[in-house]
Image (cartoon, rainbow, N blue to C red):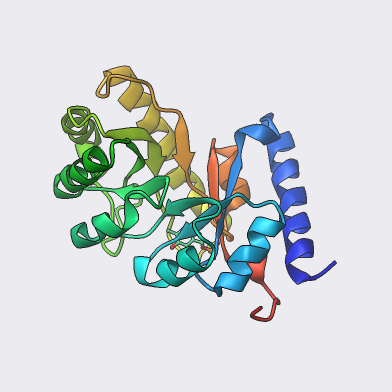
Length: 231
Ligand SMILES: *Cc1c(COP(=O)(O)O)cnc(C)c1O
């Protein structure tokens, strides 16, 4: 097995073990292969190995890969999204994980309407309260969701957060638990006209904790690439 295949197999074993510990079904946890560190060939390799979901955090880096691959795969935009980049992303990325302000929601609505299909979005919440993090403060989530629910081409599928980096995985637990609580509160408040289920949380350093706290989408980059030469 080459490096990426064995990394994938190792990650898969850890995911299964975490699911078992948490009493969760493996099929309820999706993996987004974050390919921002590599070339189009590396993204092609991920697709070939059966990773259907590809994550990129900047349009400038994603564009050459997306074009080289002719849009194969299901693409997730996971980084901060500037309003003037919405036109590039909508229609190519099936999901946007970083909806965090009304100006962005309005622009997504406009582009999605023109395209004639809704865009699936995660509302990004800054649960940890770190100043460096994008995302809505938790207390603004419900009023924000009420506003967004008026935009029929913006389909909220769940919430996304990033835990503080460079710390023990356990340090992420309260942040992930906080996101799950916020999702439940959002549903109880009926702020959207529909229930949302998804939690986009967990990266290479903390994905097992994220699974234990209810993640439905992991965003995995370096754990899949480690010790792999650029292909
Ligand atoms: C880079 C990135 C990831 C993946 O990070 P790793 O620690 O390499 O797994 C996940 N989410 C976002 C938003 C990212 O920018």
